Length: 451
Ligand SMILES: *Cc1c(COP(=O)(O)O)cnc(C)c1O
Image 1 (cartoon, protein in one colour):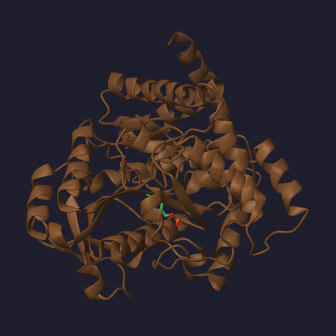
Image 2 (cartoon, rainbow, N blue to C red):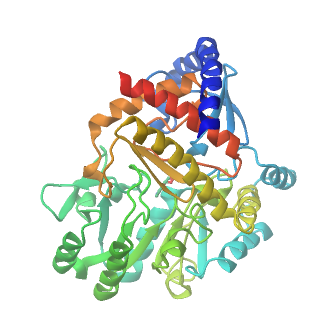
Image 3 (tube, rainbow, N blue to C red):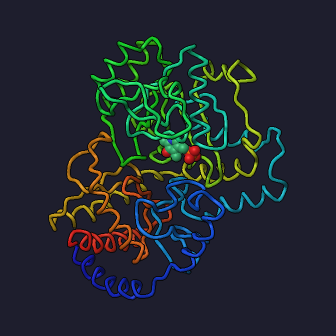
């Protein structure tokens, strides 16, 4: 603790120098230009920094746990391209295999050996899926999984949970209407209410609401979809008993259980949340890490269930660039490294130490905050309560996050630009990097709580 204090004092001087030096003029100029080309200047909304202040950073380079913006500022990165970069930026093995592969062409629209290799690597090391289909994004994986569930059951309705994100799939961009178990109301323009009505939205962590909804609609429910470790709206870790309850209800009513593991998959273990909790869902979706930084998604299930997918079965799903060799190479080179002994144990251990360091500091100072972690995922909440449901997050506390985010940028630490986003530790973050980041975060918390 003493060493930490000395380091903190030293860092204060470094940070003060940084504060004076930092300029984001170039990013601001590029953002102004980008607004001419793209809605809101971005190609994915949360990149626009709407929930925090200032223009977004235009990043030009990354190496390990660090990124550099167009103004040559350096940041310790905890966003990791929103989750995919579990090995950090510009990982040598991934880059080398991409270069080797791309030198022979980028896509042939045919099966390739590399596709087989990635498929085998995944299936040989995952007890929860027998067969998978590669697609090009998490959204596409979820969309296809829903179609499979509907095609296999001949039913239409889907149950989802408030606080879970499943990509921009029409029928899942819905929120709860009024009442406990209600049909969804779309959260985006352009989604017919008739689509939204096929979705039932329930609160997380509420077995009674689930029982009630299944009693009422169970015979029409094709699937229950959940992020088993909801990590797109804070980190709303569920009780294992709740996930088991979903499993049993699906068996009882003949509905399928979909684990959307686009964010947890390969993050909390090679077998993701299914392996972590040892719960067998019917369909699992993957994305993010599976592509090693390239656009890849996948969905998988039993041989029997996947037999419904074209060309074996009647559920149509296709993709021009699906499983292209460059993406498969990146995924293969990434996932192979995750199988190293103790990889996940070490990631979890260092993330724990990092989080406790900040939490202990906050506690000693009497700050209202806590850090939830699982594996190498962490979420800083301005609350000391255990939060398991979306409605328990205090929207007002996001003002504090805004201040924190700004102060961290000034000192070279990059978190995702919203207090609802989780942070990711990568294998490239060393203990020293994490200690440095923790010290800077503590210093910024002093500012947050003094204003
Ligand atoms: C990121 C994410 C998606 C969407 O994936 P994209 O590749 O952005 O389309 C879907 N589900 C979950 C759980 C995610 O975290």
